[in-house]
Image 1 (cartoon, rainbow over the protein chains, first blue to last red):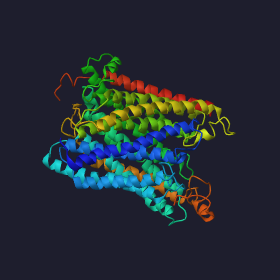
Image 2: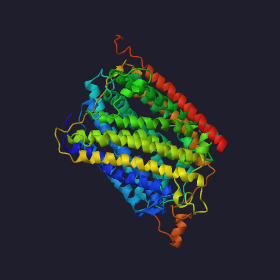
Image 3: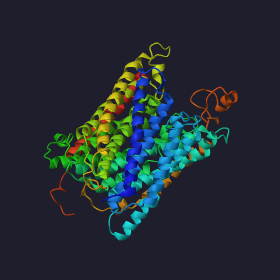
Image 4: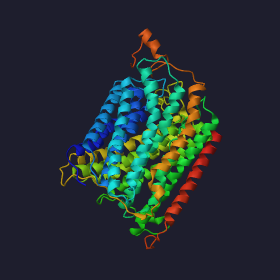
Length: 571
Length: 40
């Protein structure tokens, strides 16, 4: 489908703008591992404080990059699947809100006024521009869903009254319904707690309630990242290996089960939180295990689709067929396969480390250790990042009307990333067994042999994680060369929006799996049941008292530091 | 449904992979549990 003018600019900039920020985000990730290993001893480097860098790394990589790419991919996939153009006016409003919001939040972070990490836990408090920026980014990302894709789908449905809900569009709709639901609690946290505290309208807020609202959003956020990657695995990956999607109904079922189970799970991030009943934490633990179900369905369906493709290519045996997959192929669009398979290999370990996190007993041992860091670098830093990097490069080449440049480097990039992240994951996981903390600028204390706080048992693993991080960054550099080469290549054909779409081997129609309403109803009921009492408890029974605002520099309330005029403050 | 050579495809390899994955997951979970109990 051809694309021109403003729409083409919007889609291209939704890929290039966050990529420019991602260069900073990845660089700061490298600095993090070097600082945590004590290779860089100072907690301030290149004018960026440690916690400022950590905030930028998390916010850019996990919030800004992901949101932009999800919107760009969804825009293109809805347009391509429904064969209907997007509405330029709606897209411009979305683009302005997202870019404007990102720049506001970037201002707060780059000037050191928002060293609150991407979880922005109170009582740490940021400059108001950080919170308003995040809200604008999120609102902007929802605009196309409500004002472009839904109207387009309704128009398509009128023209195709008997046509089945296209699988990728169903996936996009599940993703954005989920996104809309989870944005509500975090918006309440920001608008009624964090922003008033940041602006000085209130003296103190309830941090327990804020954390409960945050994780109402924060864990399902993972599925907002993952679902577009799953759409790619179902729709694109089988075609790349010359096969078919093994089961269309299984794919739909997995997507819809995410809608039901992925939201009421946030308390598994709060097992150690006083003030919330153990019974409700156990209920959320149970539901977290239920979320593994659609992921297991996906694991089997994707493996079966890969097997189908591999057997078309002459694959034999129970396991030998894996050798027939196009791991290093540069033919046509097959280079993209390397991003999906490397991401899936990382995600295999992201799955089991996540199950450990979800386990009520084991979580207590790994909570707030480097285990968590290892885990999310194989999920959001694994499958999500690699799928998004791959699809960005693919879409950018199509939108510019060029061939992907430096394909050899483009194929090498995900494998270098895979090796680096696996080393990082193993190092962080083993270090966690010894209690190595997450977040902390350990290099200046625990990893420094000259420090009285020195922990020799963490030293080797912190350095190994730095080595893993450095290898992953090499992979990113390889990708960067290919990305920039493609971005500035001379166009050789018409710009298009298109994807290699797989047919389904089993596509028996199951009406229930093309109807969102019953699944959404169950989802809302389950969320209401699972969160009503925990939120009531957070508001009334929490053992955590209300707290005034702090920043990351002094362990005294901000108001006191203002009175004494003794510290630079982020207000 | 009309049966063709394609729809007769039985993903034995995917089943084997899935079982292997579940075993791997169980081993890692139990190993983690043991390490936690012994070390911490």
